[in-house]
Structure formats: C-alpha cells, structure tokens
Length: 333
Image 1 (cartoon, rainbow, N blue to C red):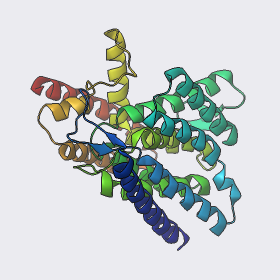
Image 2: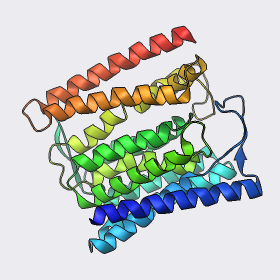
Image 3: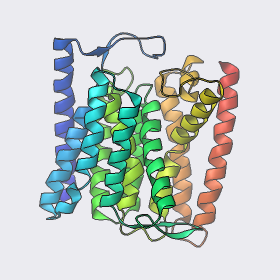
Image 4: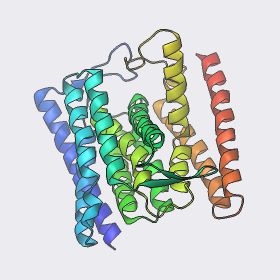
C-alpha cells in the first residue's frame, strides 16, 4: 500500500512540475531550437528532467517517512550535485572539466555512502573501499554511464522509456529497501514524463534529467546490501545493452577520427536509424522489444544453476544483435 501511495505522489508531482515548467518556457522563451545536430522540428522546451527528479525525490522522502528509514535519503546529496550542475549547463554551458569534476565528486560520495563490497560473478567479493583499483574502476563506471545516458537522449521518448525499463527491472530484482524505493520512484517518474516526451515531444528532459538518470542507474547497485551474487549490477548492464554499445562504440569511433566525443553530433546508431527513415517511435519500440525479450529470457534462468551461463549467453547475443543492427542501419543511411 505504501508503494502505491508513493507512486501516485510521484506521478502527480512529476506531471504538475513538468506542466508548470512548460508554462514557464512559453513565458520566458526557454526553448531548444533545431540545430544541425538536432533530430526534431520546431521549438521544444528543455530542462523538463527537473520536474521528473522533483517527483522522484519527493516520493523517496515520503517513503523514508512511511517506512521510518531516513537512510533512504542518503543518495540525495550526490544526486543533488549532479542535478544542479546539469541544470545550470542546460541553460548556460559549463566547461567540460568542471562538469566531470563534479561527476567524479558525486560518484565518490555515492560509493562512500554505499556498501564497502561488491560481489562480481566469476571474480568474487571485491572490497570497494579497500582497493584503489576497485574504487577507481567503480568511479569510472559511474561517470561513464552517467555521460553515456546523456549522449543517448537524442530522440523523443528514448531516455525516458529506457529509464522505465531499467528502473523497473532493478526494482524487481533487488531486495534492498533503499534501492527498491529509489528504483520505483525514478521508474514511475520516467513513465509520467513520457506523457510529455513521447513523439512528438513537448519537452526534453535535458542534461538535468538524462545525466541524473544515468548516474542513479550506474550507482544504485553499489548500495544494494542484499546482492550476494552480483546480479543487481549485471541486470542493469543487460537492460542498458543498447545505450552502452552505441555510446561506447560511437565515442571510440569519434576519437579515432580525431573528433571531440562530447561535442554534439548525429553519428550514434540510433540517430543514423532515424536519419535513414525510421520514426523516433519505431526506433524506441524496436529496441524496447529486443531488451524486454532478453530480460524475459534471463528471468527464465534466474535462480537456477545456469543463471550466470544464461546471462553470459545473452550478453554475447546482444553484441551480435547490435552488430547486425549497425550494419543494416549504416547500409540504409
């Protein structure tokens, strides 16, 4: 019952906050105009992710009162740092080094507030706080996914729909109250945001939304005190398969070409897919279908002795699917 009330509050606050942001955008002219690297037509309000975060954070705060657990609020400080610099950057561009410094600071806080160890399949128990290498790799992972998620927020509904799926599966897999509450609140907020962001979008979530969502997806598994087999982190990775493959491969390709990966462009696979003639909605739903199919197959083997082998097979299959999609789309474009 508490989760239902919390979800209802998140929906109401998110829709109200984003609706108010749209009114402010019309009044003060806060719009994202089409550019050479844009895949939308006409002016669209940006920064709507602030309303999404407001709904999710109020939901978590309410849950912490209902469940009598104030520790649920601990991720609010690092998330607040991420959201603040991203919101400022949405309206006044900030230096890349400043943004990355704050991303690393927020990631460090999240790891410090999280649990000191992480179970990784086929490797074993890793002491995050006691190992320079493990801590460094964890920081790189969080900052990488945080920024990749923002790079993938380039077509209507894509990042919000991915948030619904990834937070939804995270909420189902975890048994940790903190992680579950945050996953439910953020997933419901993303779903409510889709009301405004689905094709044709009335508002974009902006850096404040996309970067914050990526940060939470990358860092919340480190707060899971019940994950004894590393499945929480791996299931998030599996749900983000397309975002990770497209983001990383595009960064590597742009670096190889001598281009700055953080500069706006339209060379991601999903962008080429749209430029080749597919609608934003078609691209989103096709990737959604593949993702849900892989998650369903994993659910069939979860908890069995073949769990890790099944997960490994799915990762291999996802790579093959991505290569096939890439070849097909690039041939069309």
